[in-house]
Amino acid sequence: MIRDSKLYLLFKNVYCRFRDDDVPALGAQLTYYFILSFFPFLIFVVSLMSFVQLSGDSVVAELIRLLPEQTGEAIEGILQEVTSDSRGALLSIGMIATLWSASNGVNAVIKGVNKAYDVEESRPFWKVRAISLAATVVLAIAIMLAIVLLIFGEVIGRFIFNWFPSPVGFGPIWDTLKYVVPISFMIVVFSLLYWIVPNRLISFKSALPGALFATFGWIATSLLFQFYINHFGNYSKTYGSIGGIIILLIWLYISSIIIMLGGEINAALASSSSKRE
Image: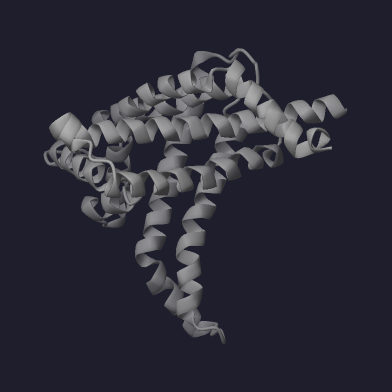
C-alpha cells in the first residue's frame, strides 16, 4: 500500500532522477561556477546597497549570518580588501564586468535545471545570457530589499503600528515578521528562478514545490552545517589559514545540490502530471 502512495512514487521518481542525472556531479560543477561568481555577486550587492546609504559591513554581516564563523571572517576580509579601493558607480565598466561574472552562477543553474527536465538548450546565446543577467539583478535586489527590511523594518513597523494598533502588541508581530519576510523573499526568488530559467514552458504554480523545498532545505542544511562547524568541525587544524575558504566550498556544494534537487522535484512532478494526462 505504501509503495502505491503518491508520496512514495514521487520520492522514487526523484531518487531515480537524482541518480540518473548524477546530481552530486552537477552540484560540483555548479559549485565551481558559484565560487567564481560568489564574490562578484557580493560586491555587486554591496555596491547596490550604497545607493540606500547602508555600509558594506552591515550588508555583509546580514548576508553571511548562516555561515560558520571561520568562513564569515574569511569572506569579510576578502571583500574589504577588494572593495577598499573601489570608486566607480553602478553603471561603470567595472560593475558591468562584475555583474557579468556574477551571472555565471545563474547560467550554470540554467544548464542544471534543463538537464532535470531532460531538455536541450535551444535558445540563442544572447537570450540565455540576458536571463542570467536579469536573474542576477533580481536576486541582488531581493537580497537588498530583505536586508533593508531587516535593518529598518522595526522602525517602519512601529510607524505603521501607531496608525493601526493591534491587541497582540508590536513585539510578537515583529518577532514573526523578521523571519517571515526574508523566507518569503527566498520563496519568490526560487519560484521565479525555476519558472523562468528552464528551456520549457511551465506555470508559476508548478515551480512552487521546488522553490519551497529549496528555501527550507537550504535554510535547514545551512543552520545544521553552521552548528556542526562551529561546535565540532575545526578545519583550520587541517587546512590552516584557508580553512574558511574550504568550508565555503563545502557550503556552496551543499547549496548547489539543494538547488538542483528543487529542479528535480519540479521535473518529477511535471513528469507525473503528464503521465496522468
